[in-house]
Length: 359
Ligand SMILES: Nc1ncnc2c1ncn2[C@@H]1O[C@H](COP(=O)(O)OP(=O)(O)O)[C@@H](O)[C@H]1O
Ligand SMILES: [Mg+2]
Image (cartoon, rainbow, N blue to C red; front, top):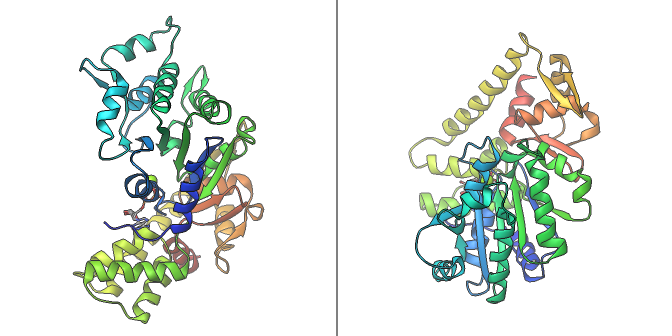
């Protein structure tokens, strides 16, 4: 599908890439706000093929339970008798995008054996240096990074990885690093992590504001339905799903065959069932969250009271809800936490509409 707008974000990313690497960048935002779509648009349509080599790794679809699983995802083995740089040069003729860092067959095994002096990260660094020598700027993008947030090796893998990324950016200015995540508790942890202080920056990719959402509806209806929607129809869609790109796409696509009001009621009911279920379970069991190094119980009444705060407002200060309570609601994808601004809001307008109706 054609990409719409996000000109401000695209400009920002392009201007970051133009300068030498200095920070790790975290792209964060609510679920389905368009983070992956945005970074893909930049890679596929906005980069100069001759200048960049992009390694894009999306952890979404994989089951990662140990260090070796993650490393295996970073690399792509090949058996030809070629240097990895030669292989890359062949691959980037049409697009700067490379899935998986190329590595000659059997090399990974050797690098992973503990007694080797050169490790996998040295291998990557050397390859990045070769790319740079060819006059090209390497970029690493890790999508859904929270999937390795809890993985342990000696300590946590994520720390080893952050250390490595700091060396690539702040210290060596060798490679741009972008990390994407919808998991706002993960982003909160990252944001408060001392080792990243002054070494990381944060870019919010939020749902569209109202004006942009209405334009997105025009953009989609012209392409998908071959017609323009009335102002009333657009206002109605916005009142249900707000500016969440995924929901707007869903509604317009389904308008090909179904009635608008039915589509919207279906979505609302679907969100309602999920929240109902979540609240019902709380009658039978009390959930726990880990705050610092303590396990804390979260009571149903506190959860209800927290949600009630959104009856009048879409966004609140995170201090208005006790930490364990908002942690639970964020973990359950009911709320989105913006750790940079210190705010909380429903993950979507649909959830907001449900909160307003059932509480
Ligand atoms: N700017 C955009 N133009 C067109 N479609 C978009 C745009 N942003 C998001 N979408 C659509 O919305 C859906 C969710 O976007 P995605 O990038 O997967 O969200 P995220 O990575 O933030 O969870 C995708 O199907 C995508 O095609
Ligand atoms: Mg994504």
